[in-house]
Amino acid sequence: MSQPEEITHDTLLGGKVVLRQHAAGYRVAMDPVLLAASVPALAGETVLDVGTGVGAAMLCLAMRLPDIRVTGVEVQRELAHLAAQNIVENGLDERAEVMVSDLQRPPPRLVPRSFDHVMANPPYFEAGRVRASGKHEKATAKIEGTARLEAWTAYCLSMARPGGTITMIHRTDRLAELLALLTGKAGDLVIYPLWPHQPFDENGSRLNSEEISPGQPPIAAKRVIVRAVASGKGPLRLAAGLVLHNTNGNHTKPADFVLRHGGALRL
Image 1 (cartoon, rainbow, N blue to C red):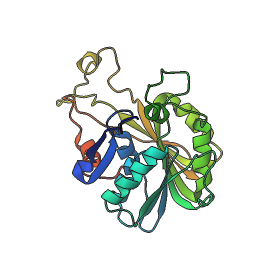
Image 2 (image 1 turned 45 degrees about the vertical axis):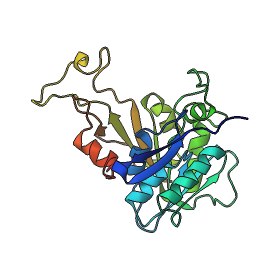
Image 3 (image 1 turned 60 degrees about the horizontal axis):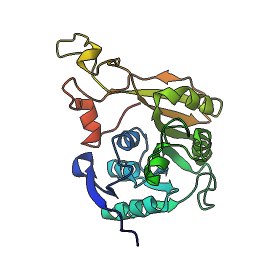
């Protein structure tokens, strides 16, 4: 008989959100927090979180905006169960729910084009491009299965109402693919880079790459947030983005405002 997996009790947003998650396998980092901070929901609106995992993004969003409703869908039943526990533990069960769902076979109760906003943190890697973790949960979170990025994007587009937003966080090296999938189906696109390090020192002098990460350009953005308006026609815009860390490794004040204090990102 297998032993139950160890569950840790962690926090996000400086303790405002409590989070149950597995001690092994996929562990929540800053990406879902940044994703939640970038959704421009208003009071009374609805948000769909595609691939919600243990609920980190939806919990952060619901905690930041007390007058919205959030629905999460997650293909892994065990993670969806943890997300449901997290919703209750954070006192959000009247405004948030999660259901087990495969985005390629969505439940009929979720009506297409009925959400004001859709957000997603899809698996970053294509199958066969990286070595899969021995932990199925972690592999599913990081490596695409039968649902490739095309399927994720199509589902997000299908669930947002005309004029609603689709917001996704992904690796910069897949930005061209993501933009191609959105082109012609959504407009008013915003690309918001997430810069890992501050490229200048306190005196305003540009740092050498060796001073931050040997062999790596100091201002290479590895992640981007992309937001689009369903059926929108406006042009693409490249935003300044967010610098995550100072030269000493600590979060910058703008990043700390989002990650610890639940602030919003203005894309």
